[in-house]
Image (cartoon, rainbow, N blue to C red; front, top):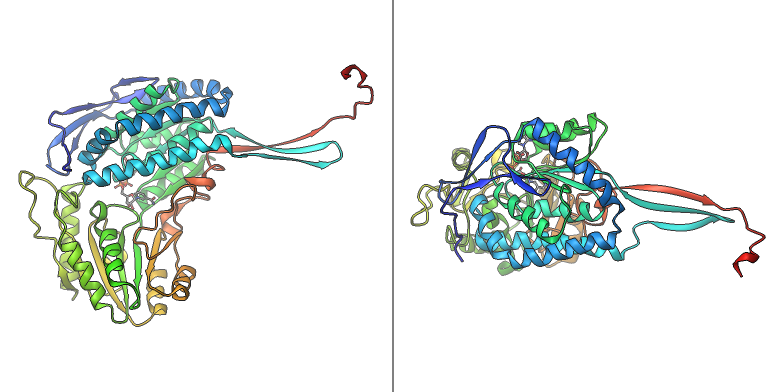
Length: 491
Ligand code: NAD
């Protein structure tokens, strides 16, 4: 299905205390990557707007903390029904603003709903634990909310990334302050409306539109107890340092440069599909996309399959658009540079034709560069576009040396038919997530998502089981009761 782009400019607003309202700062435009045209606008949130939103969240959270988890979960259950009902409508909107294909938009929201299902299941888990540690003395772990927590999210997953944290942290009893990407803020209005309809009390979910200044005012607010961030490495590090300097807990997920190790014994058909889909999915604008193919030995027939599949994709239908015009220019420049440095171009996306009627949009086709120097920029820096750089290697050790040398640490995959060689790569990979015969090794719930090195600042994970300790406090309660001898009154 083609993405339905809004035909009228949408007035994108903050959501504070259950009401949509404009921010007090300057106006910004929202541009659709498909058409290059304005589809919305919003007013940036000032420090005063942040103050109002956090104060209301703090007051609402006090009551929410007293609501039993089973009751909080009812809201999440309603939310699931509403999001499923509105799945297509939200998918069109989020794809319009982020450049995803309709199917990718839908898949992203469904993945977010998996996290929601995990949060719904929390009510049935033992989240604490209690035991008798000596005669008459018990120790207990009791999980308590943090209070007001904040999340700052990137443009590329306008619903999925926020949904990593919204259901879990609300179910654990927190109030949630969200600063969506200024490039893709429209989806936030749909999620806010869905939570209100689901019955979430006002003030527990506050959305503040804006950019850097809004983020800084949120981090600096004394009542914001924890900060979750997903975005580029440079900003992740700055956000992490700013929050932790103030004694707050922070978890900041950054950028990536993911490798796929392709061995000659891999199934050519399956590896062709897996690798092509990995670097072209979301037009390469996802932190789990394949960026470097470490081709070990003679894998020419596999590479042929990758080229065939990637070249069959139709722009605007199978593969979406690039977020900004300047990002298209950045990608073109990187490809030009690699060509100058001697890379062979197996597939050239620079001259790709825009879909009819979308000539002003931000387009580039899948691009495959072969014989890339592992020290060159295209092999080392995050491009965030549909560009696959192939580095030829003699053996697995050489391949893993290259992989280990990159500053990021999100994902690495291997394609092989040997369990033994797969295990070798799994052990040697310097990443938080590893795949075997999987091009995009995103863990499914209840497993946590997260990288290492420059792909994540902070300890723990933002989703899944590991996230529970981040989004709550564990209180340790030790109890001793004197033995009651005279308890005849009980009989
Ligand atoms: P970005 O870092 O430009 O923006 C992310 C968020 O930070 C936005 O909400 C933005 O408004 C805010 N921001 C931007 N500059 C800021 C500053 N100086 N101070 C404070 N806040 C600031 O990222 P993006 O371009 O929106 O997203 C793409 C990046 O996100 C890529 O690097 C990608 O790899 C990464 N990403 C990582 C993951 C992951 O799980 N590791 C997931 C998705 C995206």
